[in-house]
Image 1 (cartoon, one colour):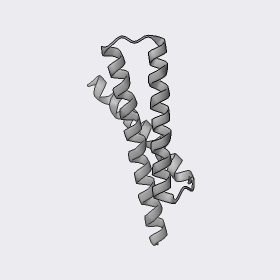
Image 2 (cartoon, rainbow, N blue to C red; image 1 turned 180 degrees about the horizontal axis):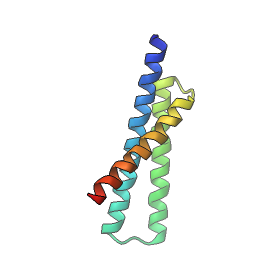
Image 3 (cartoon, one colour; image 1 turned 30 degrees about the vertical axis):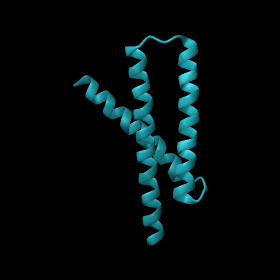
Image 4 (cartoon, rainbow, N blue to C red; image 1 turned 60 degrees about the horizontal axis):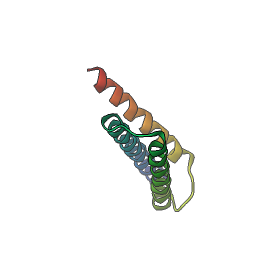
Amino acid sequence: MPQIRGELVIFLVSVVTGIMLRLVYRSISIFRQLVEHSLFIIGIEDIIFWFGAALYVFVQIYHTSDGSIRWYFILGLVFGAFFCEALIRRFQKG
């Protein structure tokens, strides 16, 4: 049973990681709406974001599962990002 509890914690950490990544990218997109950017600058911002996101996910995987990529970690990332997007859309309509 303790192993399942550990996997659940890893899954929840990955959900929070997915939510954080989605919120950061949403913040960048809001900033882009407020301040006009050229396509070159948008590309640079995206490269920096994805490099930072990859580094952040790598560190999370390293700390939670000693560097092993688990399917439930990836599932949690995707679930967290979609959950956050659903909440964002719900609050935009209301």
